[in-house]
Length: 330
Image 1 (cartoon, rainbow, N blue to C red):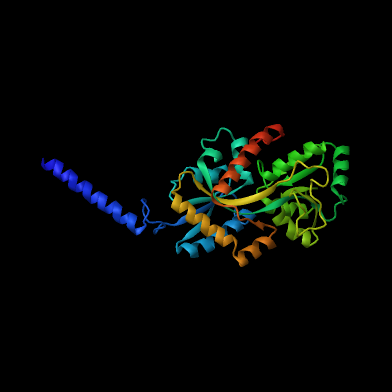
Image 2 (image 1 turned 45 degrees about the horizontal axis):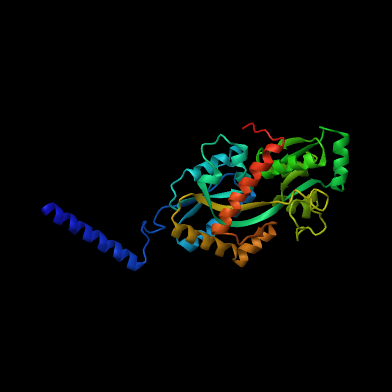
């Protein structure tokens, strides 16, 4: 009998606490954020476009949450190393990742990974996107993409193109475009877009397939010539540069995007708070100005809509990539 009364008393205390927390509007999980550091893992090297985007977001998010938010660079294996850390982290709001179109390809490019983007990661908010550009050095004899195609066909297998690495969206676009154009070119992977851009400017590689952000600066300085972009419409920064669709490659209408993701299972109140805060940050005039100046179009996609976009993107790459000549060596 004493055990029964004790159990009832304990039950009553628990019920009272639950009711009290409910009345105060407090979540069932512990208050978030607490004193723990919040990490945004970038699966690329420091100094690149995604790293810059993550640092813009982290600085403002730290102010909004009154909490330390840091960026950690974990490059390697086409983004798989960094994204694995995010996918396998505890879903508590203290570990996020800066995902991109390249990391959304990992399910298709690396089917033996122990984790899956589609299953283990969920979208919080997209930050923005940018076209991929096909560019040549300013002194190149190729004034148009048609000029390059003619020479590539005449010198089959002799011309090369640089990208920011194996298994990136630039690599996929390069092979996709080569297939549609019926040309054979040698892929030269670099350890990041900065190195590829530098070699293009130095005329060490005849063409590069890179995100618009690093190419735009060089194009404005007269150091490279952008021949085409992959967006559906012409980019406002480059009104005279045609899209690949305009040039007959209508299948390639994609952009490089960057967005914040978290491990699947993040508590809904935490996910909603992060989504709302990042969405608000992206809409800040000073942040929009910095993104647009870098060739990145700010996005309003967040929450469930961004998560659906991610899942659809993964599925689309799983259909396309097996049809292309892409072999991973790392």
